[in-house]
Length: 350
Image (cartoon, rainbow, N blue to C red; front, side, top):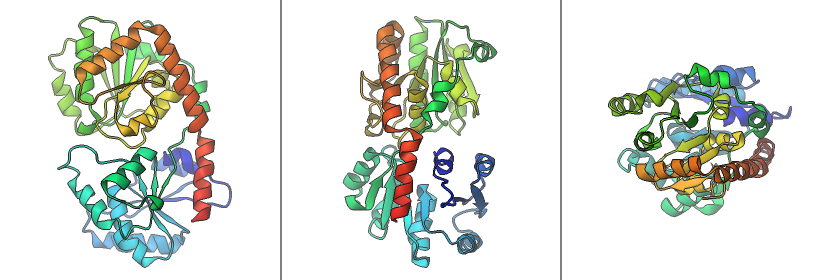
């Protein structure tokens, strides 16, 4: 999202600097190629005290007008450390809820409860995220400003379907292709998607499933399908730099996530003009209206996912309508230019 947004608001008056805590990250070179400065403090762990001196030196050197933190570790450092050192506003950018696996995300939940009174400003990438923090953690509503993720809709509309890419994946031109773009974490719900695909494959053999992503759950997923009849039609594609092209050769996008922020992957699928199935959670309902811009299914429900896929395969008119209305919604509400203007105004008003 940042890689799309920051160059769009580079108006000659604003300089953006991305500081990564642990490592530079896989997108660093792309940021740099687009004129965004990337700095890294090389933090070995949370108790690497020398890294905090390096972080302070970077902030002193660059003298930012505002500091925006992303995700748990950066939020923690921002709220308990940086905002007491500097007069510049420190803003936590809320990217997700922790609305699943209560024990795993217990530290993040405790952190939000403990730090909500000292946090002065928040950004949230969807109304669902704001509502969650207000209702669950009792954060004051006026502290949170909502600016959604944005997407360059024209980029996805202009890409043409490349059947040669299908052939490279051993997929026929007329096969029905399902794609999921999500890193392999347990809360992304791949387990249920794979179960649904196996159920459907028993009656429909000309279907394929593309899984784009990486993560520690991958080995478990590979083990899950080892006895599946459908396993030769399940393609683990790892991390890819041609996701827009993969979306264009696909007929259906599915995200079986248990919780979310504002899904960039769903937005990309909407812009690409393919049908969408997503779990019926508040975060996804910000983008998908059931039976209008996509189909919503209950989470952790393989049978429901399978039925929804079958419904789209067998109803061409429904599929066409879902695609058209999803593309219209993403164009009117979430085009990158619209979001960049909102973000620029927010920064100017800080």
